[in-house]
Image (cartoon, rainbow over the protein chains, first blue to last red):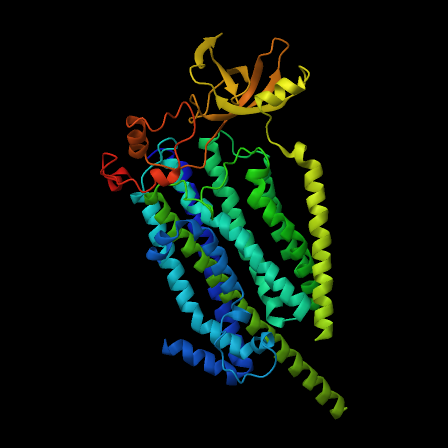
Amino acid sequence: MTHLPYIAAAYALAVLVPAAYGLAAMRRLRLARTRLAALDPRPARRETRRETRR
Amino acid sequence: MTAETSAAPGGFEMAPRAAMFRSVDALSSLATPAPPKAPGRSLHRFANPGRFLRLAGALQPWLTAGGLILTAAGLVWGLVVAPADWQQGDAVRIMYVHVPAAWLASAGYLGLAVCSVLSLVWRHPLADLAAAEIGPVGAAFTGICLATGSLWGKPMWGAWWVWDARLTSVLVLFFLYLGHIALIRAFDDPTRGYRAGAILALVGVVNLPIIKFSVDWWNTLHQPATISLTGAPSMYLGMLWPLALTALGYTLVFAALVTARTRAAVMERRIRALLMAAAAREDGAVQVAA
Amino acid sequence: MTRKRRRLYWLLACGLGVGSAAALALSAFRDNLVFFVLPSDLAAQHPGPDRTLRLGGLVAEGSVVRGSEDGHPLARFRITDGRDAVPVTFSGILPDLFREGQGVVALGTLGRDGVFHAAEVLAKHDETYMPKDVAEALKQKGLWNPKAGPPPPASTWNTLAPAKAGAPTKAGG
C-alpha cells in the first residue's frame, strides 16, 4: 500500500476522536443519571428501569 | 439504503445533510406523529424534558448501533476492498474519512443554525441545550476534516496546508465552532450565553455557501466537487459505495453523540434545578427557625 | 405569538443584511481571493520581476525536460491554460502527481526573460476518481488521453464492469 503512514494516521484520527467523544458522553450520561436518581427517584426510576430492561 | 443510492447517486450529497437536520432537530421534529392531543403549540410540545428524554432514550441505541456498524463497514471497505486510484494510488483511501467529516462539519453547523433560530425566535429551551452540545461535536468533525485533509494534501499536492479559498473557509468554520463553544458558556446567566451563541452561529451561516462554492468561484488548489446534485458523480462506483456507507455512518455517529450529550444536559439542568430548590427550602427553613 | 413573529421578521431582516454585506464584500475581493493566476492573466498583467506569485495551469504535453544543474535536479516545462503558455524552471523534487497534462500550481517569480522561476511546485488533482484498470481501459479504447485533457463524462465509465476493464476490481485493494 502506498502512502501507508498518511492513510494510517488519517484513519486513526477518524476513529479515535469520535470514539473518545462517545466514551466521554457515555460517562457523562451515567453520572447524570445516578446523580438525578439520588436527588429525585421518581422520574429517574423510569429511566433506569428502561435501561436495565434492555 | 443501497437501492436508494444506486437509484439516485446524484442526490446523495444532500443525504447526510438532510439526515443531520432530522437528527439534530430531533428535539422538535423527530416525533411528528406524536399524540395529537398534546397541549400547546406544535414546537413547544417537545419542550417537555421528560418526553424528550423518553424519545431520545428510545432513539439512542438505534443511532449508536447504526452509526457504528455503517462506519465500520464503510471504513473496512474503503481501506481494504475499494480499488486504488489510477493517479493517487492508495492515498485516495483518505477520502473515505475526509469527505464524510467535511460534510458533517457543514451539516452540523446547519443543525446549529436551526437550533439557533429555534432559540432566538421561539425561545425553545431544548434548542438552547442542543446548540451548546452540537458545538464541540461539530468542532471535532471539522478538526478531523482539516487534519485528514492535511494528511492527504502532503503526499498528493506536496503541501500540508495552502491558503486557498476552500481550506481557509473551512478553517474559518472551525474557528466559528470554537467561538460558539466559548461564547455560549461565557456568561453567568446561561440565557444570555444562549442568545449570544445563537447570534454568532447565525452570522456564521454566510460561511456555509462560501465553503460549498469556493472551489467554483475562485481558483483553488482544492479540486471542485465530485458529487453534485445535477450530474453523475465522477467517481467509480466501487469507490462511491464505501463513501456512501461512511457518510451515512458518520451522520448517525454525529447524531448519536449530539443526542447523548443533549440527554445528559437535560438531566444536568434538572439536577441543578433540584439542588437550587433544595437550597432555597433549607434557607427558608433556617429563616423560619430563626 | 406576535412577539415571536416580530422576532422572526427581525431575524430575517438581519440575515438579509448580513448576507448582502457578505456578498458585497466577496464580490469586491473576488480578484484577490484567487490562489493562482493563469498564463493568460500573466501575459496581460506583466508583473515585475520581484513580485512573487502563483502560476497555475496544466503541464503542456511534451514539454517536460528533467535534467540537473550543479548536482541538483532541474526540471523545465511549460504551464498552459490552452491560450498562453509560460516556460517554467524548477530546481527540487516534484510531487508524485506531477506529469504532463496534470494541473499544477507553481510559486515563484517571472524573470525578465519571460521564464517563470518556481521555488515550489504543487500538484493539483482533479475531481475524478477511477481505478487503474478503468483508466487503462479508457486509454486502450482511445477514449481518453490523460496528457491531453480531462477524462470523458463520468456516466460513460463510472459503472464500467471490472470484467471489461481487465482484472476484477475487488482484487485491486
